[in-house]
Image (cartoon, rainbow, N blue to C red; front, side, top):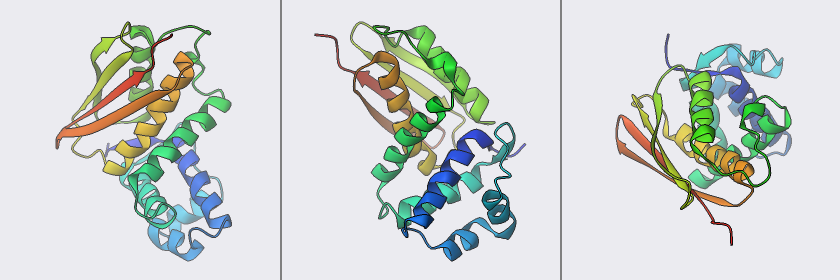
Length: 195
């Protein structure tokens, strides 16, 4: 299987893209040219199945188009869209296993649930907990086998992971990421300690 993503996250990105079209931020003709006629028609008709696999290259084209047109080429735009995607998926109740009780911390169990979610969403890459210090309020996720993992997806996941963790711990989080090698990406998530 070629590197692929689940339709649930692709559908959220496509909804964001067509919202940008409606707001006049992205030209509909450019969407069709970028996606190709077949994908464009499937997207417009809502034929993206949440549980089906779709090529990561297609997902990358959607993200890059939004970043280049509506985000003026800034990666921070995709980070913000990732935050919004986390909220959209949470409101749909798709990832209830990540819900936490008030006062819960982002412990190893929570991080392992994030890793299980990643395994369900991406047909490629390997996600692992590299380090965790719940007392100090941080953890690091390492993605290996990531040579086909696009930068657009890395930026979007910065916002997604930040928002999911902030929701879980009930406090603001910061996230940094780096592509340490062409094959390795790290996300470091930190939250403010309780007073």
